[in-house]
Length: 339
Image (cartoon, rainbow, N blue to C red):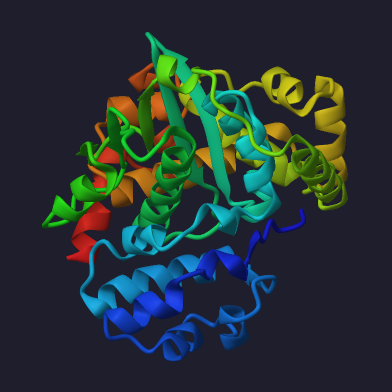
């Protein structure tokens, strides 16, 4: 099976050098430690391994003692950093439509970041998760991602707009004041998902558009980029599983519907890549289970739902079969090892 090694454009480091200097870090030295080329600070199109970028952000936060490093980096981002995507977003009639468009093109900016929308009881949930092959902390990367998403929403909605809440799966830092000030609303940690909670009616309101002609050319350019930079079936199925599992809808039929093909086509392409749908599902569940148990205090019943199991007992049976012990014992073992 071909390994999925996602990369991100070095434009994702916009603002890093200035922020590193402001908190007493040597940007060049930090990049070398993370195995990243120094030229990526000046060349926005250098491909970088996403796991190396995540490690850079975590080490920068630790070395500087700045727990909200990722948020501070998000605060330095401009709407124009989205490139041609910003033109298309500004042309959409509503913020909701702009978000749908952003979800479509986001893989061009960061293929490891999965974003999807859910509507429930008048609320719109903008959920985000990071697809990774590697263990390790992702606090700074996730706070950067949601911070950038919030800045995009403010650009579309206006400076006075604020969401109802912002949620992070990871535990709270010692001081949550910077997070509340950044988002201007309640921030929940140890939550069941990473995302932003908004009023659906606000995001469905009609807004003024931008330049239709420029947006049309930008959309054509982005569609060409999507078609020429297509990921493997394994990578696309993996990302969709991350999104569909929490809702209990992660079947090959549902994945095929999202890909616009029939179920047999999905199985056939996966077989060509040396894997199966059930193999990918198992890998995704193992990865999510390990990440949640190591990095959050999420109750096991909620974790069972996140992984798409119909009941906690079904999850418990799967976990023992996969890991050789109970989920509670595995989590306790990891904490003892860390201590």
